[in-house]
Structures are given as structure tokens and as C-alpha cells.
Image (spheres, each protein chain N blue to C red):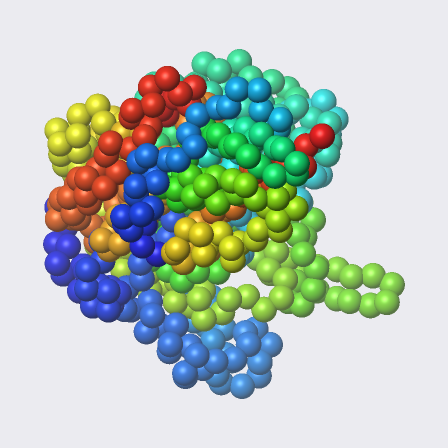
Length: 120
Length: 425
């Protein structure tokens, strides 16, 4: 796994969509107990589409860069499409093969968003 | 210090992994050629089951297997070989005690005492037992020196205390609990209390003298002391083992079986149901021989000197950016240094070091309650053994500099308004 990749480091150092949203439709906090990563995400949803997304987090390179790229990716996508995103899609979006030990770092960003969408 | 060039040449992994800086012996140690050869010898020359084979290779395997028991008995200062039980690992040894002894003697409103610095394998079994029995689970704190608070121990032991289970050396702090003192204090308050010592980090690094410690049971693992994986050792007092019911039922552990009833074999077989890890147990004796050849006192001294060097160098090089979990004083530690480096995530540190051939551990090291107490979710950990030297320390220092180069000016440092604070110890 190449976590030195420029693109990943850029997202880690300057994550896109960083910061909470005002008056979000959905909010959620996801925690990975085993490594202490925490992600708080806010969504604004119009006509079943995510129009705005913001997050704040504490985490490693992988989870931060993944969240930065994923928040770009889900913008203007329908919620039912977002609910179908899986690990394979995440690997494509981030552009690296992640070792099994760090798959959780990829998944927690997705879980934070999917759990937010599922909230009533 | 030990001649690490000579020692490294005994460990074939260094020939196969030319750029290896192995700083994770607390998780598992590397293996010398003699151990690997012995394992190979069993599988190629007398591979057979032990005890009941009426043919020469089985008798040879049985002799080799039992010779390890004899050697381990002497190695730990025990009296009787039948007091040395082979299990799968330290976790299984501790679970054996929980399921047989613990289940028998702990009742409602009794209590079991452990410490906050326990590895999960000496924490969770006792927590589960207390939940099941509605007994009290008492967790001792640790002092500034990173060892069990003795005054708290004295207060907590009472007539309802059935078991005290403590680690000898913390796998995070590297600190050494004064077991002899602990046993004296505890037994003075309650002479019937059973004292169990998790010596997984002690047996490889200092001279273990089980009878001198005064504890009732001592558990440790082969794979952390140069031996093969899949072998744990549980030493205990014969009279206590004899009163305990078996842990598992099956082959080798019975005396007589009929439709009406079953009686069990004598020690140690009563606790060794089924075919054990024969080759691994046989090869363990070579690990013990290797450790004895170098000398546990010399190993302890070597690790202390190296820890002193490492702490001095790391503190000088990184100052407050490098925070040791627990005491930052080599005199209070063995060769284990768990740390937080700036606000960098331990998984990133371990990953970037890993790419440079430097092996460390990242996470909570199976000691989540201790990390929670220190208010951190995870840490990085380097640990030393007899094959490590100052060159390894310099390599990790250079490695950490590279980590810093890659990760510095991360958004954490600039987003000071964020509610997510940096870890602190």
C-alpha cells in the first residue's frame, strides 16, 4: 500500500468539505473503537440527493483522505446510490490497495455517511 | 552490552530480510536457527504421537517432549515437572484457571482483584467470571512508577477476595510489579487468596523464579521467549492443581473410562487433553537452552542499557513531540517503550516505519483499559530483545524523522478551532 501517494497526502493535509454545516438535515458520529478514529458528518439532502456535506474528524491518513474524497464523490448523488457504495468502490475512489489490517480505515468514512442517511 | 552481531547471525530471518529492524518482540520474538532445526528434526526424524506408541520413534518423541518439561521446570525454578502444564498460550493458561479454579471457588459477593494495566487475557476472563458469579471485579490503579498501588491493594484485599491476578511486567509500560511484596501484603490480609501471575512479558526478559515469587500460579508463552508459537506454560502448586477439575476432556487426560463413569489421569496429563503441539514443545527446549547460554541476567542488563540509550536519544531528538506512556525513566522499565509522537496516528506511524523495514506495533496492545485511563485511544510501541542494538534505535529515530517529514503540516495542526483535540498522556 502506498500511503505516500501525493493525492492521498494532499487530501489528508487539506481535506475537502472540512467543517460542520449550518442546519443540516442529517448528522451522525461514527467511531472506530479499536483505533480511536472519530468522524462527525453533516448532510443536506434535497429531492433525495445529497447537495451539501461537511465533516470533522480525528483519524489516520487513510480515514481522513477517504472521507475527503468520499464527500466529494457523494455530492449531487442520490441517497439510494450512496447506500449501495461498497468496499470495492472505496478502493477505486481512493486509488490504492489497502491492506486487510487497514480496511476499517476505509470503511468508517462510508459508515458515517450511510448511518447518517439511515437516520430518521 | 551483548554481542548483537553474533546473536543476529543465529537468527536466520536477518539473512532473509536484509533490511529488518525488528522492534516488536513484545508481540512475538524471532526464532534462532537451533529452535527451527529442532522443529525440523521432529517432523523429519521421529514424527509420531507421544505417550502410547509402542515403537521407537514414538518413544523418542515422548522422551524429547518430556525433556522439555524437565528443562522448563529447572528454567523457572520449579520443583516438580508435573507442576508444569503445557497449554496453547498464556491466554489459554489463564482461561484454564478461570474455568476450573475460578468457577469453583468464586461465589456471589466474593471479589477478584486485577489491575488497570492488565493485558486483555488477564482482564476479560476475570471480568466474565465476576459477571457470571455476581462477584465484585476490583481493579487496582497504578502509581507514577507504573506499578500496582500497594496501599490500594492492602485496602482492597479482604476475607471475600478469592483471586488476585496481576501482570509481572506491563506489556505497555514495561514496568515491573514487585510480585514478592504484593504476595506478602495480600497473603497477610487473606492467607487463602489465590495469586495468579501473568508472566508473558517476564519469562523472556528476566530470571523467573516461581517459588521465590510466592504466587500460586504463573503463566507464560513459548513464542515470546524465542520458542515456537502454539505453546503456553502454566506452572502451579501441585496441591492446588490436584484439587481442581480438568479443563478439557478427551484423549490422554483420562485414567479409566467406562459407560458408567470416567476417572482422570495424574498431573500433568489431567490438564493436557488431546494431542499437544508436540514438535513445538520439543523445540521449546532449544529456546530455553539459547536463553540460558546467553544468560537471563545478561539479557536483562542489555535491554536496560539499550532502553537507557533509546530514551536519552529519543528525548534529545524529539523533546516534547515524543511522549512515553508511563515512566520515562529506564531504571523503572524493561525494554518496552510505548509512545505518542506529535499528534500523528499510530497506524500511520507504524505503516510509514513498516515501509522502511522497521517493525513496531500500533493500537491499544490488548490493554484498552490502560489507554482509556491515560485518555488516549491508541499508541505506538517499540520493544527490545537480545538481538536489538543501538543501530536499531538510530534507525527508528531516522524513521520517525521521515514520518514527521511526510505528515507534518497535517490539517490537525492548523485546525486549532476543531473540537478534536490532540491526544495527551
